[in-house]
Length: 215
Image 1 (tube, rainbow, N blue to C red):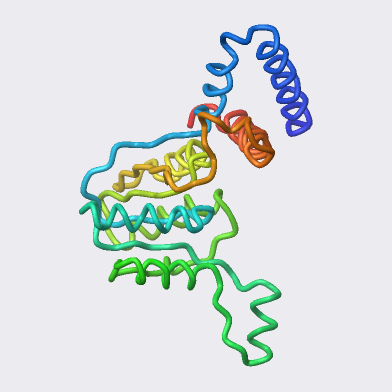
Image 2 (cartoon, rainbow, N blue to C red):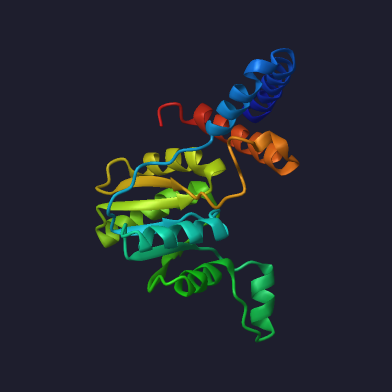
């Protein structure tokens, strides 16, 4: 019921936004840019114990993490592990090596000059799992500060999840948006993929706010 209500609210907001952008061309760009930047955060970063690439970070996250390492923020980078899916299991059954996303990220990081690239020793299924898993791992490793890299369209919701999970823990978290991402908060409405990303991620963010208003 909450999801249906949220979807209807989001549709109404976009209808009003469309009307405003047509009827008031002067403020159209400002309204659309504000909607794009609602999804984005980019915390300032200093020296940290480790850099973590979020599961949705993909290639842009790997590149950003590499830049941060070469910029002196940290010397280590970690990526999340995911349980083998049906394709990976079938390759294994046939005795054929299969490079999943985790292995790919580690290989790419090392190719980019990151000597210390590792997998977080737990499986996750999505953003909501990443927060608690990261909190437990940081406690085990006694990290005082970490930088988590994600895509800009996902960054604000990611930070909310991480801040909830890290309450009561000693580790501070900074969230960094990869500037290699294809999502551009200043021009997202100019492509179908940008519009789709904005709608989907804004819906997820609003749902997170409704479920956790004090995050």
